[in-house]
Image (cartoon, rainbow, N blue to C red; front, side):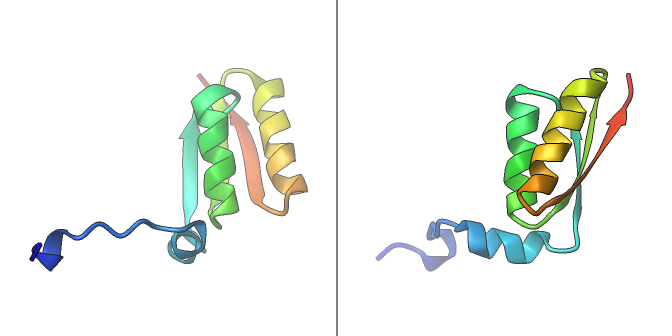
Length: 79
């Protein structure tokens, strides 16, 4: 039999959200691509999200989508 210490148990979004409630995720490059996708996923899982990037319009748009979906997000422009 396989060693139970190494058993893989897939995590569901629900199990992840319990761990992320009350946590803050700081996402660099959050205005598009992988950064925006990660921000939206973490927000759905219960984290509050801080989006950072040089492009103010892009991170504002992502933050707005997250808030519209019921999440918490702010956009901070930085370089």
